[in-house]
Each structure stands twice: as C-alpha cells, then as structure tokens.
Image (cartoon, rainbow, N blue to C red):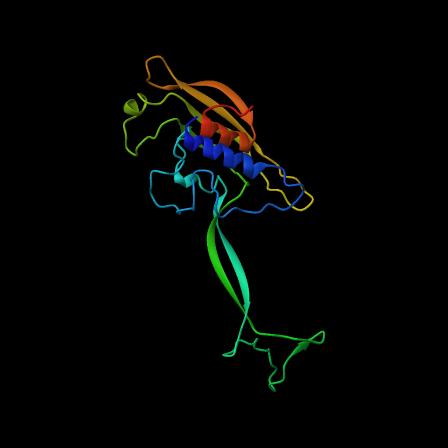
Length: 208
C-alpha cells in the first residue's frame, strides 16, 4: 500500500472509532483524501492521491466533506478595555437575574470539515483509472482493470449523544473487462458498510 493510501486508511480508522456515545466532532485538520489543511475544491493533483479507484472532487459531499459555519461571541469593550453594558431606552443598565448584561458581538466563519456521515448513493460509478472527459471508450478500456457501480445504499449516521454511530450500507456490482477489452462484464456483487466502501475505494480490497 502506498503512502497516500496508508494515510487515508489511518484517518478513516480514526474517524470511525467508537466515541462512547459522545456526539461526533467534525475535523477541521484531517481529511480522508488530502494530507494537511484542506485546500478547498480547486484543481490539484493531491486529491485522493494513491487511492486505487479514481474518486473525483465532486464526491466531497459523499465523503462528508462540507463547509461548516462556526461562530464565536465576544464581549464589546470600551476604550479602557471594560465591558460595555446593555442599556434600556432611559440609559439604565439592564440586569438579568440581578446580573449586569453586556453587549456582545457574534462572528461567523465557514470552514471545510470532515465528518463520518458518508453518503455514497445508488448509481455512482468508479473506475480504477482516471478517464479524461471526451476520451474514446476503446482508449479508456486499455487502462480499466476494474470498475464498481453502487446498486443500493443507505447513508451512515454519525454518533450522537447516547446514540452510537451507524455505518450505513453499500451494495455494489463489480465489473471486469472482457478478454478483448471491448466492454466491461458484470462480476461479483457484494455488500459492505459505507466505511468499508471507502476502504475499497482507497485500497481496491474489501474491508475484512
């Protein structure tokens, strides 16, 4: 297994480890198809590098890589660095349960995050090689050694408070080239979890 695949498998294992009933925390620093800080969806050669099957960037959502909004609230300070109280129309400080209320500002920031609600769906098709748009099929068939198509799927559900994670389901059809390399022939049909399907995409092997 190459370094890129090893990294992705390690991150997958870490992401789906049991969380003892705690709610899932989305990662902002570790992503399945990319080592390091998330660069967004711009073109580049590091995406899913080393994976056995070609997984385009359009599959980010299926990998549960989404933009997540984070917020932080800060107390407003005056020129002397003291909290600014909230006042009523008469200029009197507002109290709540006997406590002074202070002005606050809330700031929002969107970041790419990695979760475990994997949602590969029926009809998705993957080849073990990149096929450029517009390439003739007979040319592509010279390189294709394996293809998989999802025929049934149920999304994974992340762990929530007092509710363990559900890994979902993927039933897929394997295809292999015929002897003349003219077409792809259906081979075996198998089932696995969404987690196991990602392992298959990374390594080319069914998760044991």
